[in-house]
Length: 408
Image (cartoon, rainbow, N blue to C red; front, top):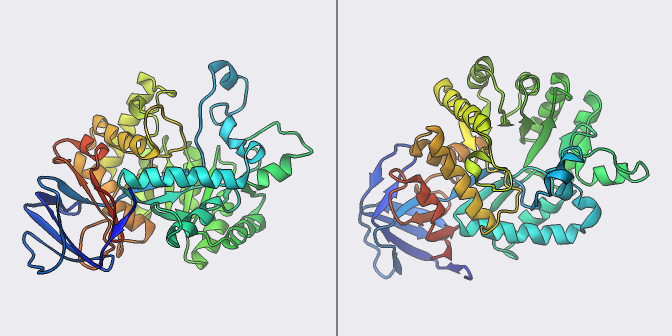
């Protein structure tokens, strides 16, 4: 439906969950004025202000996906094709720079952005695979009101070592293709230069990828130093233990994935204030084309429990780049997060990770992440208590962003 806005609006509901405290306000009333939250209470007197009564629903802050790829829609090929190529699961869409125009990719991103918003994700952090400026252009179009979508923190091109994702390209075309998706690093000076190149497109965050320790701690440090000079945070893709250590030693702001983090590394992250962005993309078989093995499921359960015990600050990212049969991008994302309950993560921690924790990691804790006076009026509603049933976040019935009703 088209978005609906009013100068002032009163939202009434059976309950409102405060993720920070875990307390529930019942009944709940939220007064919205000029796109921001004016007042929150059980009862609000607002004569002449139109009201929306959501009945017994529970209100939540707008949800935040800390790791997405809006301009990808990977359809996993057959096993034979996957086994025949390096990183074969991703090859079809990582080569979009060859087979699709930048304009077509941005239109795909616009569709996925709208789907995310309609599922309650009012803010997302897009971390690469968007061409040179696809996600920054999409962000700007949404901010200008030309498109309807979530608030986007865009990273433009991912900083990575040559060959990390795509290999064996035609050498006559390889450089031109790779530069549409990646900024390569070969020493400290090129690491600094890569940050400057992304600044040309007004990025909100710097994304880098470390695989098998192929970017050194010194190179990471140079990227972080230049980014921080521009008041930008650095998110580091790091899965194996050596890469995670280089990311920690280089002083990144968040580690993405981190699947093989050790106990000592979790302690270092906690002590240094580095965020852990968990990405349970295929846990629980939500992505049906990538069913998890029992070994991988148990390993992820173990990781989640170690993170919870370590005290490291964490958020959640969907890593959503997949085509999921029968689900929109937003529906698949919500299902991924709900599946974490099976790892033993309490429902309140899941909700915190995609609201107040996420807002703090992004540096936007003064704007989003909770339903409090002065913050953006990003509000969603679910039919019943999400603390009792976290799968309620898969059934968002009402979405407001910046005081505009997107879905009801």
